[in-house]
Image (cartoon, rainbow, N blue to C red):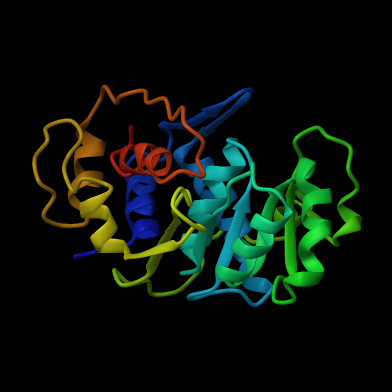
Length: 247
């Protein structure tokens, strides 16, 4: 029971709240710190009316915010959509429209790209900007800076019942045509892309609390480098499966 991605992550937080969860540049977050930041973004998105089944894009290069955004979106039962940051205008229009995006979390450097396509994607109505040090003005697309979005949002976990049937979508690379969104149930993708096994022992996971229980007892957690772009499923699951184990 209990293979919802957000639930698996929160169980790890509860098991090892003070353990280091993520290091990216100068950013170092414990599991509890990561969880609170994800809660704030999740509650911000929920306050805008987004929730179960809504598709929210992540258009950014690797950063702490990328991982936090993905978990935050799962927390409100919405669906994170991976966006290749190398796409040009026509490809972005296709993907934004095909994915039925209603909101977008994006690096600041892509504001001009977004501005060029928003008129063609009228359903896309909310933007949150990750500040990457570039100088484009978020007001050009009505985007809210990340720090501002989370500042007034609650750090408490969204109060809702999640399901193993919630959706995980990964867009393909489009090597033989236009990219296509592959839809998984959370439970199915955990056992398929996530392996469905304990990364330390290779034993099959039989219930949703198993990994968190082992995390608490593990005094020597692994350090894992998620090197590929997080817009790819392999990178996402290279990180997620170890988050679930408190690594």
